[in-house]
Image (cartoon, rainbow, N blue to C red; front, side, top):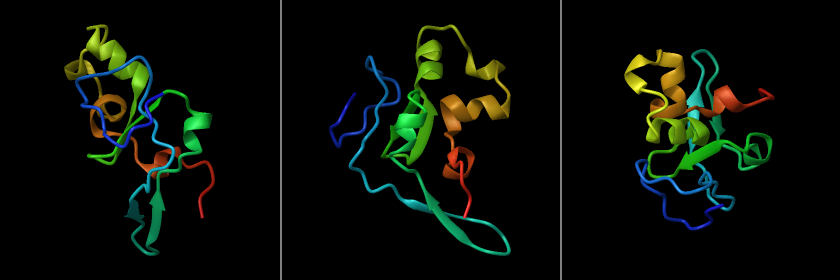
Length: 101
């Protein structure tokens, strides 16, 4: 796994997902009535081995989905908006959190 602080380009994928363990993941605000701040947790890399994090964009993508896209197995124009999160928009912490505060 990559351990450098340099984020790989989205178009250049290695053999494994980029999973920075010692990165200070930015917090995002969630909620309308009660504002809650959440950030990506590096422990999620253990739970979901396919996560691919891009520091420059602060997004988490599906590494296997990106590899399939790279090889032409999937075409993003045919994907629904939910599926686009795995290869384009990124998954946000609220989608990955197993315990909500």
